Length: 536
Image 1 (cartoon, rainbow, N blue to C red):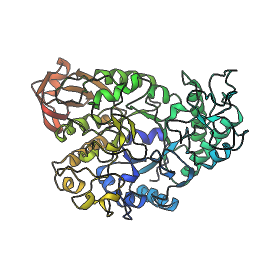
Image 2: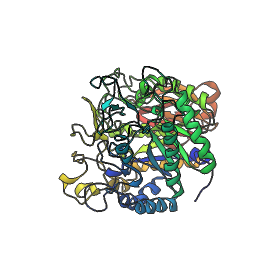
Image 3: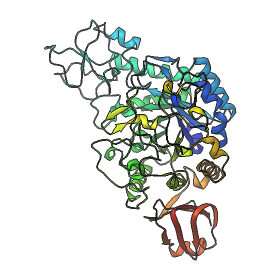
Image 4: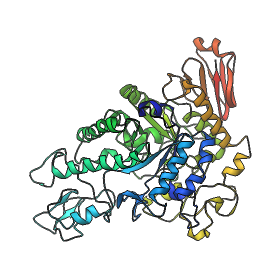
Protein backbone atom coordinates (compact mmCIF):
# COMPACT_ATOMS: atom_id res chain seq x y z
CA UNK A 1 0.00 0.00 0.00
CA UNK A 2 -0.81 2.42 -1.33
CA UNK A 3 -1.96 0.04 -4.02
CA UNK A 4 -2.75 1.99 -7.16
CA UNK A 5 -4.06 -0.95 -9.14
CA UNK A 6 -7.36 -0.30 -10.93
CA UNK A 7 -10.39 -1.20 -8.85
CA UNK A 8 -11.28 -4.05 -11.19
CA UNK A 9 -8.00 -5.72 -10.16
CA UNK A 10 -7.84 -5.20 -6.40
CA UNK A 11 -11.52 -5.90 -5.87
CA UNK A 12 -10.97 -9.45 -7.10
CA UNK A 13 -9.11 -10.13 -3.85
CA UNK A 14 -11.38 -8.11 -1.58
CA UNK A 15 -12.93 -9.42 1.61
CA UNK A 16 -15.40 -6.71 2.64
CA UNK A 17 -16.45 -5.88 6.18
CA UNK A 18 -19.42 -3.59 6.80
CA UNK A 19 -19.26 -1.32 9.84
CA UNK A 20 -22.33 0.43 11.21
CA UNK A 21 -20.26 3.20 12.82
CA UNK A 22 -22.58 4.20 15.66
CA UNK A 23 -22.59 0.60 16.93
CA UNK A 24 -19.00 -0.57 16.48
CA UNK A 25 -16.83 1.05 19.16
CA UNK A 26 -17.31 4.15 21.33
CA UNK A 27 -14.06 5.91 22.29
CA UNK A 28 -15.41 8.86 24.29
CA UNK A 29 -18.10 7.31 26.47
CA UNK A 30 -21.13 9.06 24.96
CA UNK A 31 -22.78 5.74 24.03
CA UNK A 32 -22.35 6.16 20.27
CA UNK A 33 -19.58 4.60 18.18
CA UNK A 34 -17.09 6.88 16.47
CA UNK A 35 -14.06 7.03 14.18
CA UNK A 36 -11.54 6.83 17.01
CA UNK A 37 -13.30 3.72 18.27
CA UNK A 38 -13.08 2.09 14.86
CA UNK A 39 -9.40 3.04 14.60
CA UNK A 40 -8.71 1.43 17.97
CA UNK A 41 -10.25 -1.84 16.72
CA UNK A 42 -8.52 -2.03 13.34
CA UNK A 43 -6.18 -4.73 14.61
CA UNK A 44 -9.20 -7.02 14.98
CA UNK A 45 -9.99 -6.58 11.29
CA UNK A 46 -6.36 -7.00 10.27
CA UNK A 47 -6.06 -10.20 12.33
CA UNK A 48 -9.30 -11.48 10.81
CA UNK A 49 -7.96 -10.95 7.28
CA UNK A 50 -10.36 -8.24 6.16
CA UNK A 51 -8.90 -5.89 3.57
CA UNK A 52 -11.81 -3.59 2.64
CA UNK A 53 -14.14 -1.77 5.05
CA UNK A 54 -17.43 -0.12 4.12
CA UNK A 55 -18.75 2.47 6.58
CA UNK A 56 -22.45 3.26 6.69
CA UNK A 57 -23.17 6.99 6.18
CA UNK A 58 -21.01 9.20 8.37
CA UNK A 59 -21.85 12.63 6.91
CA UNK A 60 -23.57 15.40 8.87
CA UNK A 61 -27.22 14.53 9.43
CA UNK A 62 -30.19 15.08 11.75
CA UNK A 63 -30.39 11.27 11.85
CA UNK A 64 -34.06 10.79 11.12
CA UNK A 65 -32.93 7.80 9.02
CA UNK A 66 -29.71 6.80 10.78
CA UNK A 67 -27.56 9.10 8.63
CA UNK A 68 -29.13 8.36 5.26
CA UNK A 69 -30.60 11.86 5.51
CA UNK A 70 -27.50 13.92 4.69
CA UNK A 71 -27.31 17.61 5.57
CA UNK A 72 -23.70 18.19 4.43
CA UNK A 73 -21.75 15.90 2.07
CA UNK A 74 -18.42 17.52 2.88
CA UNK A 75 -18.48 17.28 6.69
CA UNK A 76 -18.75 14.25 8.92
CA UNK A 77 -21.33 14.02 11.69
CA UNK A 78 -19.96 15.33 15.02
CA UNK A 79 -21.14 12.15 16.76
CA UNK A 80 -18.33 10.33 14.92
CA UNK A 81 -15.64 12.99 15.28
CA UNK A 82 -14.12 15.36 12.74
CA UNK A 83 -12.94 15.18 9.16
CA UNK A 84 -9.42 14.92 10.55
CA UNK A 85 -10.48 11.93 12.67
CA UNK A 86 -11.78 10.21 9.54
CA UNK A 87 -8.50 10.98 7.76
CA UNK A 88 -6.55 9.42 10.65
CA UNK A 89 -8.76 6.33 10.52
CA UNK A 90 -8.20 5.96 6.78
CA UNK A 91 -4.44 6.31 7.18
CA UNK A 92 -4.33 3.84 10.08
CA UNK A 93 -6.32 1.37 7.99
CA UNK A 94 -4.01 1.92 5.01
CA UNK A 95 -0.99 1.01 7.12
CA UNK A 96 -2.68 -2.32 7.82
CA UNK A 97 -3.50 -2.97 4.18
CA UNK A 98 -7.18 -2.11 4.63
CA UNK A 99 -9.09 0.16 2.26
CA UNK A 100 -12.03 2.26 3.45
CA UNK A 101 -15.18 2.89 1.42
CA UNK A 102 -17.81 5.48 2.31
CA UNK A 103 -21.55 5.18 1.84
CA UNK A 104 -22.71 7.74 -0.72
CA UNK A 105 -26.38 8.71 -0.49
CA UNK A 106 -26.83 9.86 -4.07
CA UNK A 107 -30.59 10.10 -4.54
CA UNK A 108 -31.75 12.42 -1.77
CA UNK A 109 -30.67 14.69 1.05
CA UNK A 110 -32.09 15.69 4.39
CA UNK A 111 -34.70 18.43 4.39
CA UNK A 112 -32.19 20.22 6.65
CA UNK A 113 -29.61 20.40 3.83
CA UNK A 114 -28.94 24.00 2.75
CA UNK A 115 -29.67 22.95 -0.83
CA UNK A 116 -33.23 22.08 0.15
CA UNK A 117 -33.71 25.12 2.37
CA UNK A 118 -32.75 27.31 -0.59
CA UNK A 119 -34.86 25.32 -3.03
CA UNK A 120 -37.93 25.50 -0.78
CA UNK A 121 -37.76 29.27 -1.03
CA UNK A 122 -36.78 29.68 -4.69
CA UNK A 123 -39.41 28.81 -7.33
CA UNK A 124 -36.72 28.64 -10.03
CA UNK A 125 -34.46 26.12 -8.28
CA UNK A 126 -34.32 22.70 -9.99
CA UNK A 127 -32.09 20.75 -7.58
CA UNK A 128 -35.13 18.89 -6.21
CA UNK A 129 -38.35 17.69 -7.85
CA UNK A 130 -41.06 20.29 -7.34
CA UNK A 131 -44.63 20.30 -8.59
CA UNK A 132 -47.09 23.19 -8.46
CA UNK A 133 -50.53 21.80 -9.27
CA UNK A 134 -53.36 24.10 -10.29
CA UNK A 135 -55.32 22.94 -7.27
CA UNK A 136 -53.04 23.34 -4.22
CA UNK A 137 -55.29 20.98 -2.26
CA UNK A 138 -54.60 18.13 -4.70
CA UNK A 139 -51.02 16.93 -4.43
CA UNK A 140 -49.63 14.53 -7.04
CA UNK A 141 -49.17 11.01 -5.74
CA UNK A 142 -46.18 10.75 -3.40
CA UNK A 143 -45.55 14.48 -3.13
CA UNK A 144 -45.39 16.48 0.12
CA UNK A 145 -46.52 20.06 0.67
CA UNK A 146 -43.80 22.69 0.53
CA UNK A 147 -42.11 23.58 3.80
CA UNK A 148 -40.94 27.01 2.60
CA UNK A 149 -42.24 30.05 0.80
CA UNK A 150 -42.14 28.24 -2.53
CA UNK A 151 -45.65 27.15 -3.57
CA UNK A 152 -46.41 23.55 -4.47
CA UNK A 153 -44.89 20.35 -3.21
CA UNK A 154 -41.76 18.21 -3.41
CA UNK A 155 -41.10 14.53 -4.03
CA UNK A 156 -39.38 12.65 -1.19
CA UNK A 157 -37.56 9.33 -1.18
CA UNK A 158 -38.79 6.94 1.52
CA UNK A 159 -39.38 9.45 4.35
CA UNK A 160 -40.81 12.97 4.05
CA UNK A 161 -37.58 14.31 5.57
CA UNK A 162 -35.62 13.02 2.55
CA UNK A 163 -36.42 15.16 -0.52
CA UNK A 164 -35.39 13.47 -3.76
CA UNK A 165 -32.61 15.11 -5.72
CA UNK A 166 -33.66 15.87 -9.28
CA UNK A 167 -31.85 13.71 -11.83
CA UNK A 168 -34.70 14.10 -14.27
CA UNK A 169 -37.42 11.84 -15.62
CA UNK A 170 -36.89 9.23 -18.31
CA UNK A 171 -40.35 9.83 -19.77
CA UNK A 172 -41.85 13.32 -20.17
CA UNK A 173 -45.56 14.01 -19.71
CA UNK A 174 -47.05 17.36 -20.78
CA UNK A 175 -49.67 16.97 -18.05
CA UNK A 176 -46.88 16.90 -15.45
CA UNK A 177 -44.49 19.72 -16.34
CA UNK A 178 -42.24 19.02 -13.34
CA UNK A 179 -40.92 15.96 -15.20
CA UNK A 180 -37.72 17.62 -16.34
CA UNK A 181 -35.49 15.77 -18.81
CA UNK A 182 -32.19 14.33 -17.61
CA UNK A 183 -30.24 17.07 -19.40
CA UNK A 184 -32.09 19.95 -17.71
CA UNK A 185 -30.15 22.42 -15.58
CA UNK A 186 -31.03 20.87 -12.22
CA UNK A 187 -30.17 17.26 -13.17
CA UNK A 188 -26.89 18.40 -14.73
CA UNK A 189 -25.99 20.31 -11.56
CA UNK A 190 -26.70 17.24 -9.44
CA UNK A 191 -24.53 15.01 -11.61
CA UNK A 192 -21.72 17.51 -11.17
CA UNK A 193 -22.36 17.56 -7.42
CA UNK A 194 -21.87 13.78 -7.28
CA UNK A 195 -18.50 14.20 -9.00
CA UNK A 196 -17.55 16.97 -6.58
CA UNK A 197 -18.41 14.87 -3.53
CA UNK A 198 -16.60 11.79 -4.79
CA UNK A 199 -13.56 13.80 -5.86
CA UNK A 200 -13.33 15.46 -2.43
CA UNK A 201 -13.22 12.24 -0.43
CA UNK A 202 -11.15 10.22 -2.90
CA UNK A 203 -8.55 12.97 -2.92
CA UNK A 204 -8.27 12.55 0.86
CA UNK A 205 -7.39 8.87 0.62
CA UNK A 206 -10.71 7.01 0.55
CA UNK A 207 -10.85 4.04 -1.80
CA UNK A 208 -14.36 4.30 -3.16
CA UNK A 209 -18.04 4.27 -2.38
CA UNK A 210 -20.98 2.03 -1.85
CA UNK A 211 -23.86 3.97 -3.43
CA UNK A 212 -27.18 3.92 -1.61
CA UNK A 213 -30.25 3.07 -3.72
CA UNK A 214 -28.28 3.59 -6.91
CA UNK A 215 -31.12 2.43 -9.16
CA UNK A 216 -33.55 5.11 -8.02
CA UNK A 217 -32.00 8.34 -9.32
CA UNK A 218 -33.82 8.97 -12.61
CA UNK A 219 -37.57 8.80 -12.05
CA UNK A 220 -40.08 6.87 -14.15
CA UNK A 221 -37.28 4.87 -15.71
CA UNK A 222 -38.88 1.44 -16.12
CA UNK A 223 -35.98 -0.26 -17.87
CA UNK A 224 -33.43 1.81 -15.88
CA UNK A 225 -31.70 2.79 -19.08
CA UNK A 226 -31.53 6.50 -18.19
CA UNK A 227 -30.21 5.74 -14.72
CA UNK A 228 -27.67 3.34 -16.24
CA UNK A 229 -26.52 6.05 -18.65
CA UNK A 230 -26.03 8.43 -15.72
CA UNK A 231 -23.77 5.96 -13.90
CA UNK A 232 -21.82 5.09 -17.04
CA UNK A 233 -21.08 8.78 -17.45
CA UNK A 234 -19.85 8.98 -13.84
CA UNK A 235 -17.82 5.79 -14.21
CA UNK A 236 -16.11 7.26 -17.25
CA UNK A 237 -15.10 10.28 -15.19
CA UNK A 238 -14.00 8.07 -12.29
CA UNK A 239 -11.79 5.88 -14.47
CA UNK A 240 -9.92 8.98 -15.60
CA UNK A 241 -9.80 10.98 -12.37
CA UNK A 242 -9.50 8.12 -9.82
CA UNK A 243 -8.88 4.80 -11.60
CA UNK A 244 -8.05 3.01 -8.34
CA UNK A 245 -11.43 3.88 -6.77
CA UNK A 246 -14.22 1.33 -6.47
CA UNK A 247 -17.88 1.98 -7.07
CA UNK A 248 -20.24 -0.57 -5.50
CA UNK A 249 -24.00 -0.23 -5.73
CA UNK A 250 -27.05 -0.93 -3.67
CA UNK A 251 -29.04 -2.03 -6.70
CA UNK A 252 -29.73 -5.70 -6.04
CA UNK A 253 -29.20 -6.70 -9.65
CA UNK A 254 -25.54 -7.02 -10.73
CA UNK A 255 -26.63 -8.05 -14.23
CA UNK A 256 -27.96 -4.50 -14.69
CA UNK A 257 -25.74 -2.42 -12.42
CA UNK A 258 -22.34 -3.73 -13.58
CA UNK A 259 -23.05 -2.94 -17.25
CA UNK A 260 -24.29 0.42 -15.93
CA UNK A 261 -20.80 1.23 -14.70
CA UNK A 262 -20.47 -0.22 -11.22
CA UNK A 263 -17.55 -2.41 -10.27
CA UNK A 264 -19.84 -4.55 -8.15
CA UNK A 265 -23.31 -4.91 -6.72
CA UNK A 266 -24.83 -6.80 -3.80
CA UNK A 267 -27.34 -9.57 -3.77
CA UNK A 268 -29.91 -7.93 -1.49
CA UNK A 269 -33.12 -8.73 0.34
CA UNK A 270 -34.92 -6.57 -2.22
CA UNK A 271 -34.40 -5.63 -5.83
CA UNK A 272 -35.79 -6.02 -9.32
CA UNK A 273 -35.08 -9.78 -9.55
CA UNK A 274 -38.07 -11.29 -7.75
CA UNK A 275 -37.73 -8.85 -4.87
CA UNK A 276 -34.33 -10.09 -3.74
CA UNK A 277 -35.19 -13.77 -3.70
CA UNK A 278 -31.61 -14.88 -4.42
CA UNK A 279 -30.31 -13.69 -1.04
CA UNK A 280 -33.50 -14.49 0.85
CA UNK A 281 -33.54 -18.05 -0.47
CA UNK A 282 -30.22 -18.62 1.30
CA UNK A 283 -30.64 -16.91 4.68
CA UNK A 284 -34.15 -15.57 5.39
CA UNK A 285 -36.13 -17.73 7.82
CA UNK A 286 -39.01 -15.29 8.35
CA UNK A 287 -37.72 -14.03 11.65
CA UNK A 288 -36.18 -10.64 12.31
CA UNK A 289 -36.69 -8.36 9.33
CA UNK A 290 -39.74 -9.56 7.40
CA UNK A 291 -41.43 -7.61 4.62
CA UNK A 292 -45.16 -8.28 4.38
CA UNK A 293 -45.19 -8.94 0.59
CA UNK A 294 -42.61 -11.73 0.88
CA UNK A 295 -43.97 -15.21 0.28
CA UNK A 296 -42.87 -17.63 3.02
CA UNK A 297 -40.19 -20.03 1.88
CA UNK A 298 -37.69 -22.30 3.57
CA UNK A 299 -34.11 -21.00 3.27
CA UNK A 300 -31.42 -23.35 2.05
CA UNK A 301 -29.48 -22.66 5.24
CA UNK A 302 -32.19 -24.09 7.46
CA UNK A 303 -31.76 -26.90 9.94
CA UNK A 304 -34.68 -28.96 8.62
CA UNK A 305 -33.12 -29.15 5.13
CA UNK A 306 -36.36 -28.11 3.43
CA UNK A 307 -34.89 -25.43 1.19
CA UNK A 308 -32.97 -25.56 -2.06
CA UNK A 309 -29.89 -23.73 -3.37
CA UNK A 310 -31.27 -23.78 -6.90
CA UNK A 311 -33.01 -20.41 -6.68
CA UNK A 312 -29.75 -18.73 -5.75
CA UNK A 313 -27.70 -20.78 -8.20
CA UNK A 314 -29.96 -20.01 -11.15
CA UNK A 315 -29.84 -16.25 -10.52
CA UNK A 316 -26.10 -16.36 -9.84
CA UNK A 317 -25.46 -18.21 -13.13
CA UNK A 318 -27.58 -15.78 -15.11
CA UNK A 319 -25.83 -12.87 -13.42
CA UNK A 320 -22.30 -14.10 -14.03
CA UNK A 321 -23.10 -15.01 -17.63
CA UNK A 322 -24.11 -11.39 -18.15
CA UNK A 323 -21.34 -9.53 -16.32
CA UNK A 324 -18.42 -11.84 -17.12
CA UNK A 325 -15.17 -10.28 -15.93
CA UNK A 326 -16.52 -6.71 -16.04
CA UNK A 327 -17.40 -6.66 -12.35
CA UNK A 328 -18.50 -8.59 -9.32
CA UNK A 329 -21.56 -9.83 -7.50
CA UNK A 330 -21.26 -9.40 -3.73
CA UNK A 331 -22.74 -11.89 -1.23
CA UNK A 332 -23.29 -10.44 2.26
CA UNK A 333 -23.89 -12.37 5.47
CA UNK A 334 -26.37 -9.64 6.43
CA UNK A 335 -26.55 -5.86 6.40
CA UNK A 336 -27.92 -2.94 8.39
CA UNK A 337 -31.35 -3.44 6.78
CA UNK A 338 -31.60 -7.23 7.00
CA UNK A 339 -31.52 -9.91 9.67
CA UNK A 340 -28.22 -11.30 10.84
CA UNK A 341 -27.28 -14.90 10.07
CA UNK A 342 -27.97 -15.79 13.69
CA UNK A 343 -31.66 -15.00 13.75
CA UNK A 344 -34.76 -16.79 15.00
CA UNK A 345 -34.33 -20.56 14.81
CA UNK A 346 -30.83 -20.41 13.27
CA UNK A 347 -28.36 -21.13 16.06
CA UNK A 348 -24.63 -20.66 16.43
CA UNK A 349 -23.86 -24.28 15.46
CA UNK A 350 -25.35 -23.62 12.02
CA UNK A 351 -23.08 -20.68 11.19
CA UNK A 352 -19.84 -22.51 10.24
CA UNK A 353 -21.48 -24.09 7.19
CA UNK A 354 -22.90 -20.72 6.14
CA UNK A 355 -19.48 -19.06 6.32
CA UNK A 356 -17.83 -22.01 4.54
CA UNK A 357 -20.19 -21.40 1.64
CA UNK A 358 -19.95 -17.61 1.64
CA UNK A 359 -16.14 -17.56 1.76
CA UNK A 360 -15.58 -20.21 -0.92
CA UNK A 361 -18.23 -19.11 -3.41
CA UNK A 362 -17.14 -16.98 -6.44
CA UNK A 363 -18.69 -13.75 -5.22
CA UNK A 364 -17.19 -10.91 -3.23
CA UNK A 365 -17.87 -11.78 0.42
CA UNK A 366 -19.16 -9.01 2.68
CA UNK A 367 -19.17 -9.76 6.40
CA UNK A 368 -21.53 -7.65 8.48
CA UNK A 369 -19.89 -6.52 11.72
CA UNK A 370 -20.36 -9.04 14.51
CA UNK A 371 -21.45 -11.89 12.26
CA UNK A 372 -17.91 -13.28 12.55
CA UNK A 373 -18.66 -14.09 16.22
CA UNK A 374 -22.30 -15.04 15.68
CA UNK A 375 -24.00 -11.95 17.08
CA UNK A 376 -27.73 -12.47 16.91
CA UNK A 377 -30.58 -10.35 15.61
CA UNK A 378 -32.16 -8.88 18.75
CA UNK A 379 -35.97 -8.84 18.52
CA UNK A 380 -38.49 -6.46 20.07
CA UNK A 381 -36.36 -3.31 20.14
CA UNK A 382 -37.96 0.14 19.93
CA UNK A 383 -37.99 2.06 16.70
CA UNK A 384 -34.78 4.10 16.58
CA UNK A 385 -33.70 6.61 13.93
CA UNK A 386 -36.22 5.29 11.43
CA UNK A 387 -35.39 1.63 11.97
CA UNK A 388 -38.95 0.31 11.71
CA UNK A 389 -40.20 -0.18 8.16
CA UNK A 390 -43.21 -2.40 8.84
CA UNK A 391 -45.00 -4.41 11.52
CA UNK A 392 -42.40 -7.18 11.31
CA UNK A 393 -39.53 -5.19 9.85
CA UNK A 394 -37.41 -3.48 12.49
CA UNK A 395 -33.82 -2.93 11.41
CA UNK A 396 -32.69 -2.04 14.94
CA UNK A 397 -32.26 -5.72 15.76
CA UNK A 398 -29.33 -5.90 13.33
CA UNK A 399 -27.74 -2.67 14.58
CA UNK A 400 -26.97 -3.42 18.23
CA UNK A 401 -23.54 -2.67 19.77
CA UNK A 402 -20.56 -4.81 18.85
CA UNK A 403 -19.71 -7.35 21.53
CA UNK A 404 -15.99 -7.08 22.25
CA UNK A 405 -15.60 -8.74 25.63
CA UNK A 406 -17.44 -9.77 28.82
CA UNK A 407 -17.03 -6.43 30.60
CA UNK A 408 -19.79 -3.90 31.13
CA UNK A 409 -21.53 -2.95 27.89
CA UNK A 410 -19.58 -5.78 26.20
CA UNK A 411 -16.60 -3.46 25.84
CA UNK A 412 -18.47 -1.24 23.39
CA UNK A 413 -18.74 1.87 25.59
CA UNK A 414 -18.17 3.19 29.10
CA UNK A 415 -21.49 5.07 28.99
CA UNK A 416 -24.38 4.07 31.25
CA UNK A 417 -26.39 1.27 29.65
CA UNK A 418 -29.40 3.55 29.13
CA UNK A 419 -27.26 5.95 27.07
CA UNK A 420 -26.11 3.43 24.48
CA UNK A 421 -27.11 3.99 20.87
CA UNK A 422 -29.15 0.78 21.06
CA UNK A 423 -29.54 -1.74 23.88
CA UNK A 424 -27.10 -4.62 24.05
CA UNK A 425 -28.19 -8.16 23.45
CA UNK A 426 -29.30 -9.26 26.94
CA UNK A 427 -28.70 -12.96 26.34
CA UNK A 428 -26.23 -14.04 29.06
CA UNK A 429 -24.62 -16.39 26.53
CA UNK A 430 -24.01 -13.64 23.97
CA UNK A 431 -20.71 -14.19 22.13
CA UNK A 432 -17.82 -11.76 22.25
CA UNK A 433 -14.53 -11.25 20.45
CA UNK A 434 -12.23 -11.75 23.45
CA UNK A 435 -13.66 -15.14 24.44
CA UNK A 436 -13.59 -16.38 20.86
CA UNK A 437 -10.05 -15.13 20.27
CA UNK A 438 -9.05 -17.31 23.24
CA UNK A 439 -10.84 -20.38 21.83
CA UNK A 440 -9.15 -21.85 18.74
CA UNK A 441 -12.32 -23.82 17.97
CA UNK A 442 -14.56 -20.73 17.91
CA UNK A 443 -16.50 -19.34 14.97
CA UNK A 444 -14.17 -16.33 14.91
CA UNK A 445 -11.11 -18.51 14.38
CA UNK A 446 -12.96 -20.49 11.73
CA UNK A 447 -13.87 -17.34 9.80
CA UNK A 448 -10.25 -16.24 10.01
CA UNK A 449 -9.03 -19.60 8.68
CA UNK A 450 -11.57 -19.48 5.84
CA UNK A 451 -10.42 -16.00 4.83
CA UNK A 452 -6.79 -17.11 5.06
CA UNK A 453 -7.55 -20.12 2.87
CA UNK A 454 -9.43 -18.02 0.33
CA UNK A 455 -6.51 -15.59 0.18
CA UNK A 456 -3.92 -18.36 -0.18
CA UNK A 457 -5.85 -20.29 -2.86
CA UNK A 458 -6.94 -18.04 -5.75
CA UNK A 459 -9.12 -20.87 -7.06
CA UNK A 460 -11.39 -20.32 -4.04
CA UNK A 461 -11.76 -16.62 -4.78
CA UNK A 462 -14.04 -14.46 -6.85
CA UNK A 463 -12.56 -15.38 -10.24
CA UNK A 464 -12.00 -19.14 -9.98
CA UNK A 465 -14.04 -21.51 -12.13
CA UNK A 466 -16.98 -23.23 -10.44
CA UNK A 467 -18.82 -26.44 -11.22
CA UNK A 468 -21.74 -27.55 -9.07
CA UNK A 469 -21.83 -31.34 -8.71
CA UNK A 470 -24.84 -31.60 -6.38
CA UNK A 471 -27.41 -28.88 -5.70
CA UNK A 472 -29.16 -30.42 -2.71
CA UNK A 473 -28.08 -31.50 0.75
CA UNK A 474 -25.13 -31.50 0.80
CA UNK A 475 -24.16 -28.82 -1.68
CA UNK A 476 -21.05 -30.05 -3.50
CA UNK A 477 -19.03 -27.93 -5.90
CA UNK A 478 -15.59 -27.80 -7.47
CA UNK A 479 -13.53 -24.61 -7.48
CA UNK A 480 -10.92 -24.46 -10.20
CA UNK A 481 -9.46 -27.90 -10.86
CA UNK A 482 -8.24 -28.92 -7.44
CA UNK A 483 -10.71 -27.95 -4.72
CA UNK A 484 -13.93 -29.69 -3.78
CA UNK A 485 -16.26 -27.94 -1.32
CA UNK A 486 -18.97 -29.73 0.66
CA UNK A 487 -21.58 -27.81 2.67
CA UNK A 488 -24.46 -29.34 4.65
CA UNK A 489 -26.72 -26.71 6.24
CA UNK A 490 -29.14 -29.37 7.52
CA UNK A 491 -29.26 -31.01 10.94
CA UNK A 492 -29.26 -34.55 9.55
CA UNK A 493 -26.27 -36.24 7.96
CA UNK A 494 -26.19 -35.99 4.18
CA UNK A 495 -24.18 -37.82 1.55
CA UNK A 496 -23.51 -37.82 -2.18
CA UNK A 497 -21.77 -40.16 -4.60
CA UNK A 498 -19.35 -38.24 -6.74
CA UNK A 499 -19.56 -38.67 -10.52
CA UNK A 500 -17.03 -41.12 -11.98
CA UNK A 501 -14.76 -38.42 -13.40
CA UNK A 502 -14.24 -37.06 -9.89
CA UNK A 503 -14.61 -40.17 -7.75
CA UNK A 504 -11.14 -41.50 -8.54
CA UNK A 505 -9.40 -38.18 -8.17
CA UNK A 506 -11.18 -37.21 -4.98
CA UNK A 507 -10.59 -40.60 -3.36
CA UNK A 508 -7.26 -39.26 -2.14
CA UNK A 509 -8.51 -35.75 -1.38
CA UNK A 510 -6.82 -33.99 1.52
CA UNK A 511 -9.03 -31.87 3.79
CA UNK A 512 -7.75 -28.30 3.91
CA UNK A 513 -10.44 -27.28 6.38
CA UNK A 514 -13.28 -29.52 7.48
CA UNK A 515 -15.77 -29.99 10.28
CA UNK A 516 -17.82 -33.16 10.12
CA UNK A 517 -17.24 -33.84 6.43
CA UNK A 518 -15.16 -36.48 4.66
CA UNK A 519 -14.59 -38.01 1.25
CA UNK A 520 -14.02 -41.77 1.15
CA UNK A 521 -14.16 -44.11 -1.84
CA UNK A 522 -15.74 -41.45 -4.03
CA UNK A 523 -18.53 -40.75 -1.56
CA UNK A 524 -19.04 -37.47 0.25
CA UNK A 525 -20.47 -37.61 3.78
CA UNK A 526 -21.29 -34.56 5.88
CA UNK A 527 -22.66 -34.64 9.39
CA UNK A 528 -25.34 -32.18 10.43
CA UNK A 529 -24.11 -28.61 9.87
CA UNK A 530 -20.83 -30.03 8.54
CA UNK A 531 -18.62 -28.73 5.78
CA UNK A 532 -15.30 -29.50 4.15
CA UNK A 533 -12.86 -27.98 1.70
CA UNK A 534 -10.71 -30.64 0.07
CA UNK A 535 -7.74 -30.48 -2.24
CA UNK A 536 -7.54 -33.11 -4.94
